[in-house]
Length: 151
Image (cartoon, rainbow, N blue to C red; front, side, top):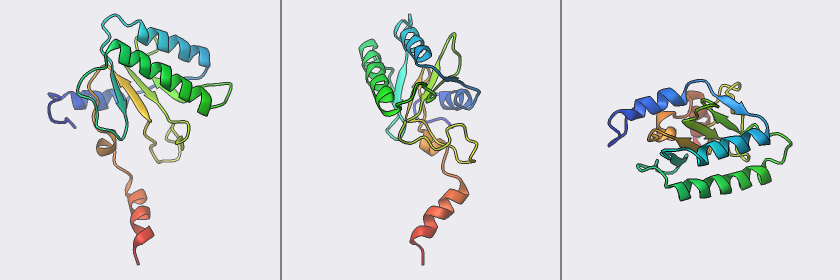
């Protein structure tokens, strides 16, 4: 699903988004991931807050650094466990897509419940697409929602 202005890369983004990911289980692994992203030579990273309009320009190095600093603080404060478990990366050695789940809206992020929970934030080398539009709620969830106010 390409969005206007992305020259078809929306399909590339969604294909990568739907591939396998590795969970960052330990806080020291998250520290290493942040350092890898901060030290990235070309620095092309899109910072996307799911639910907001996807960015059409990559973040500057200072914007990426600020986001990493702030989201790290949020994760450590609001996911008060001795493990991380809310950040997933497509490739540990050369990441180009990172899913960061909101600790206050986890549901079943692995999808075992049958309901897909979208991450709170995505870091991507490719321009992201509107995930809420690309991955709408299931029919059963829509029926549930519509049934609340009917009759």
